[in-house]
Length: 91
Image 1 (spheres, one colour):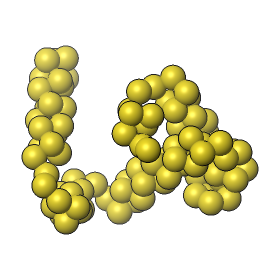
Image 2 (cartoon, rainbow, N blue to C red):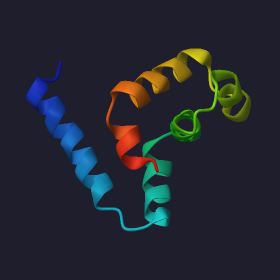
Image 3 (cartoon, rainbow, N blue to C red):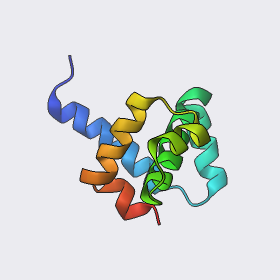
């Protein structure tokens, strides 16, 4: 089992790699290697759901537009309300 420090080091390597990207094409190339198509779609779905929630769309409207599960939408909603990432980076 990895130590907490080793796990943090690996996450920091990932974040540094993402920060080094210069274009959407570079991002696409990396994420195509890093994630499955389904994982990329799930992340994109969460971003879209967060945007819609920030536009005051109802849960039903968000689900209809994104086909996101209600459990995942609930998590996204909590992050929009109490987290910092979505609200800082989604305009």
